[in-house]
Length: 370
Length: 69
Image (cartoon, rainbow over all chains, first blue to last red; front, top):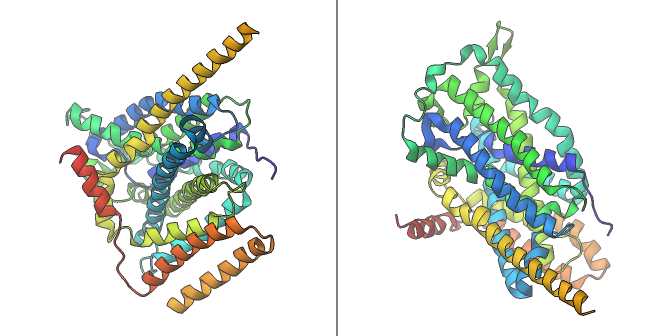
């Protein structure tokens, strides 16, 4: 199989769409109350060193992904065991996003439809795009970022007449503690989810600067999320924002310019669904790539279908109700995903650096002795 | 309902597994069929309205215990 390559622009587009995937529709950093826009900006700043860690890991091993790196550092057995942990978290993330997508559609637009229908349709599309390969996904992201990034921006601009600055004042009224909690929430979702890209960026060109790819994607995606959240809280106010499950949809419905431009939530739904789809398919690609690495296959496309079907099944029974899901997302996900997104990559990077340095020393010694 | 599930899985299985069988890739075929059978069993149980225990509750309990809540 010839090696797949994606350009750096495509990689940046993938990261932008991935970050905006869940966070465009769902509230993030809700613990910070009316300061959540500030919490998201703070999380953006904190995410920069985190992304440096990811970029450093990838540039230490050009052309390889996380599973190769783990096997190289920890040996065959422990490397595969750690890989399985990463696979489980990625699988769970994909399941959660798939469930979000199905619930989003049936709560807002198609209340009579059973939830399995949108989930199955998106699962089939995801299988298709993963079978088509990484290059196709990159080109798809490059095309759809033109659709998905401007729509929320235009909606924000149209909402300016209805914004009320008193909704965010006074700043930091709830105290620094809840602000920090909101920052942590925003750091884990959506910014920390990008750890999935460690598992699929085997396709980058070896000479591309990983750092600039990650940071550019983070800045564009993060500013988009922060801007949308700021507009939402300015229009809705804290109480209404926290009581709705999908604030972006509510806000887009409030657009009304000269009795002519109204009810833009349909366009917002299109933007949200496409980015949800990309997030699920990136997770699916990562899981099937990891599974095929663990079992020693050459091609990751073989296992895409059964894993996608498993994801589809899990997303049907993983939560009993929407309300329980939102409570779980608020209370548990932050601490559940924390080790996988932040702690484990840092530990792996430390081990990788030590190993590289030792290798460098032994090479130098050999040179000297020769 | 469960007839539809069986039919769907039959179609997907024949499309995907026959090329693997023809190319004689034994290992891939075995792993593939393990995952595929797991998905099929869960789907069948879901279509028969059997309640499957969700991993959400145990995860919540573990996280709360670690945090000391």
